[in-house]
Image 1 (cartoon, one colour):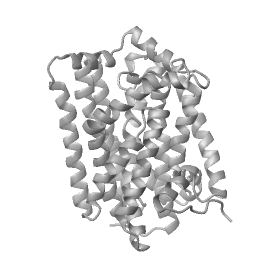
Image 2 (cartoon, rainbow, N blue to C red):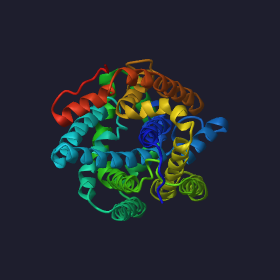
Image 3 (cartoon, rainbow, N blue to C red):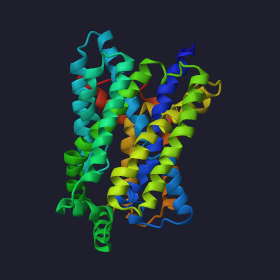
Image 4 (cartoon, rainbow, N blue to C red):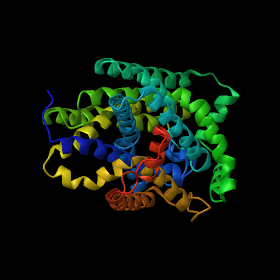
Length: 401
């Protein structure tokens, strides 16, 4: 049963969870900023993978890979319901508000992906939210079951890739997964070059993401997690309303079920010597589902902290990060591309995984400092302000009195 908690704690939990998600996403995204594209999926493709570098990659895989994207997707589903409820309370048409909000996100996501970084997730979120909107009035149990079924369909589609016969397209995929020295040098030189030079790789990569990765992977993964997030929000799981025992159970699921499944993904990939089909289309399925349980475990940890007397104080900075998660997500791209790409400091391909973690910590520190400073002076983050303006068609007040 749900328990009664302070309204401040209920509000804080949503902001904190969103802040934790956007900070945690950077642990994996840093590899895409700092190294060649396929090093994210095949760590043997680039960089040192021994000693401390291996353990950093391994722990990132266990605790972060796909886990914080799952939480972020769940929070997006919860936010969709909040927007709809607020629109109804103010006599606005929910679909109009939803459509304007997500069309604006679609445009921002496209600009983010094509102009700055091909790893963008905003465009897929906008596309998936139009589908998820159809489930807004369904009961939480229906939303949960629908989310799990959609994740299952995504599993079957991903596994079907392991059954594809030999073809020129398959050989091209294998070549990208295990790039030659020439392919690596070409990508490294491209991103150490100027902004226009980077577009030669970023534009076709983003186009392929939207034409192939989105319909065959992201749509199912993101939509399923959004629907699960809607159900969890309706049940009070994301607003710290459930019992401590409930959240301890989530943590146990993450540790006992999720982490072993994530480890199996690593073990299966290493046993296959990182062969393309066995790794990308089969071994990844362990983490595909294991990440759901680990994400629930992270949610349990955050909710327990928010329920504690110290939660309101200890997580206040993280809550500020969460209140402007859209801005901070884009800010991570701006900071990291400036540091790694040729139009900035040109460190692309130069830092090993250990050194990349220090960049992550530096970005975290900056966002944990500047977000509270900003939110004390303004109602919204810069990106949130623009997004809200586009959604409601009128400029919202920015500066606090």
